[in-house]
Length: 327
Ligand code: GZL
Image 1 (tube, rainbow, N blue to C red):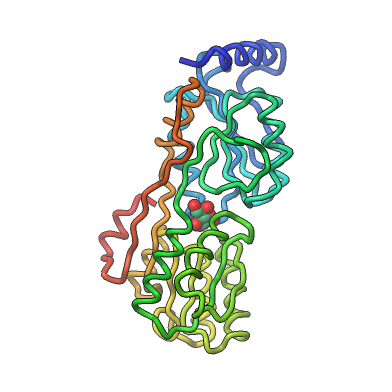
Image 2 (cartoon, rainbow, N blue to C red):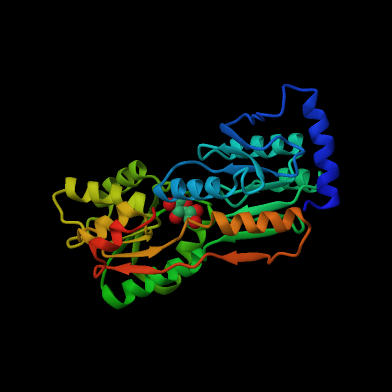
């Protein structure tokens, strides 16, 4: 049941659309936009979702999980926009969602800052925000109804604990995610709090395989004594493996690798002994997100944060575990 405010906004929205080019498609510029769902005004919850991009296996799995949950059959009318890792595309999409007067706005912010103006505009429009995955650092008071995601600082801490126990003498190169993203900031914070004294250098691979490879090619020249790479995600770790092998060294042995995510390709490299340890960051939380959005749309109380549970994988992980992974 939609809250009174939502229904009144939706009826105005539906009337506006009836005179426009029909109800089927709502396109938001500044990225790839997809709309799926029942006709507006049919009691479904209209959701504008700005996904930050498709930079990694994690993001692909997260997008699949979100789209699988926010279906018309499940009571949603979803407009999904991929921002191709550009903040300006996300801000454009968020403003389009305001114009469309959706019931709920959900987004995964590519970096933590730069959202004050648009978050205030959304608040002034009376549209609730559900923050997904990444976090924001904003001056706007009470900017979102709820956030669902992983404990990035704990992930970095868990990675550091493995290094402290298994590689206390390692010289560590830290391969960082998108600079200024919540995942990068907090994984670095957690890791460095434990073993920061072992870190000899840092550079960003922007969470992509190609940029991770480029960053490690340079790092092997700049920090020739590095013996371990802490990679903020599996895609960059896979790029690091390519760079290490191209340099005639053995990944997992000459240069050990600790990574985060636990996507299938990363776990396969773990089973192949090219990665030594992976801290999971579970992207499959679409159903939990759908439940939170329904409660927010109905004006029900929701927890301010929902932490998605993670595990960790060492080299005792078997091929059957990899084969059985959903992503
Ligand atoms: C973590 C997520 C990160 C993943 C990367 O929740 O934001 O972004 O660890 C992805 O693979 O690019």
